[in-house]
Length: 175
Image 1: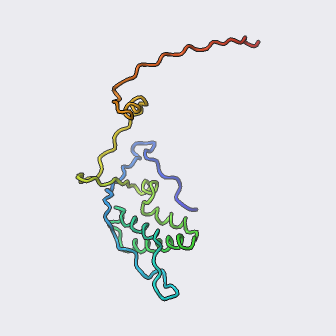
Image 2: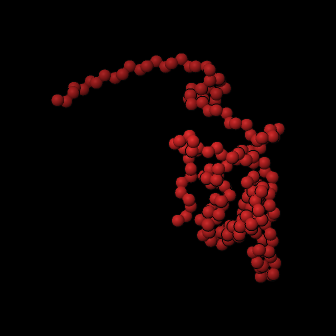
Image 3: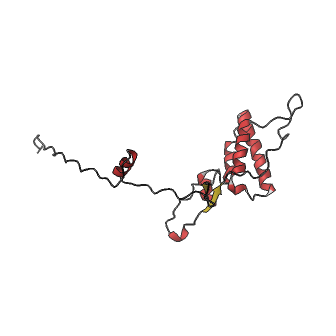
């Protein structure tokens, strides 16, 4: 059976069961080493095969994850093996998608994976040592939202529209 079921909900039915997510600041620092050369074998001229460009982009994105800062060498070796699968997927069209997804789930790559392991990321904002400020609250008042879009404030209220008279039934009722 692939995967581990549906992602956990943000709020559980009992408040005591709702666990606070650990916030990690996404600062863009690189962790770990670049992909090693020579792991993919050699071509017909005896030159080492280079990593696929998509795999290099993917690896740099993995290295930026804040969760990777304190990973041991064994985890990085596991990710290098995953990079070989990723390279084969892009180069040969192999069907390693499920295996790659399951391997990356262990590191919280997708939002449901992050909820499962109990972390959430927030971007680093210049001048703020703790990361981004809380997002602004959203208004559910559609008139207020419209007024902000056209440059007004949501305290300005439009006059209520006149109610149209209801149409009366003109056909006789069936018996």
